[in-house]
Image (tube, one colour):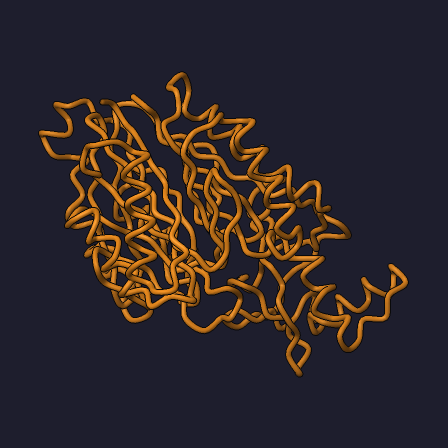
Length: 396
């Protein structure tokens, strides 16, 4: 059997029916065996508890994780207001799921609870030659602290795992971004799957943005707000940059300009963590989709529609390289909603074509959310915005 994956879509009016329809289609594409892992992406249009009831009416009590989304897609095309289910079965890989609750209250305890059942060091796993270790995770997109979550996971697992995941979305409402664990719908939490395999799970991340203008220093920040850059209100820095482009940055022109020129936090030479800039505050602060610490060295970043579209193909090629010689069985793609807002449905269709050109015609499930989480042997990326993240499951 090796490893097989199937995907399905549900667009029924009710959550239970939509979840069941997506799960049935995924089971048919996957084959006759029971799934070992189920992944669910669901629009905030639905009652998510009902969606999970529908999925589990088809899949039974098998490991299930997932999250709410800001747009969904499969190998069949771009979707919205839908439920997407990926079902994976394997006789060579082992999956263990976990859940960390109370992220905002006690991060260390939440991570300990989530990874408590992991089996990488068990005699059974070692005898089976399951030497490659991956964590796939989804986090409450409005909970913040993505960098801290990744760092805590890496510390408590002694850097034994590569990591890929996403922050949940809610169609840019910024109201509620839950994650799914078995039949539970949770906020202030993260869910994860330990994936143990005899060959590598391929990971790739890319974004298509480049720095524009000088390097600057964040001299004051608070939560998601950058208060000052180079000792001046952050919005003043943007206004000055806009004037250099012949643009008067006032009124309704501010938000589009911020999203067109996001923040790149220089975390190692030549590499930036991207932070989407969302809106200004009355005190001259600029609110970002995730934190930028005081003292961070930053640049404003610029991209074109084409470079954003190309990023998905590049992430897929990197994942294929990371997979080494194993043929792919299926792919999970996690993208930032800022990409969707920028290039639209037509652009996302083109992104899917680029992905399929790179990996072939294999089952694909994905969603847009509020950030990507990655830590691989070649890239200590952490939390990213405005990026495409690819997780490629091997057949072997």
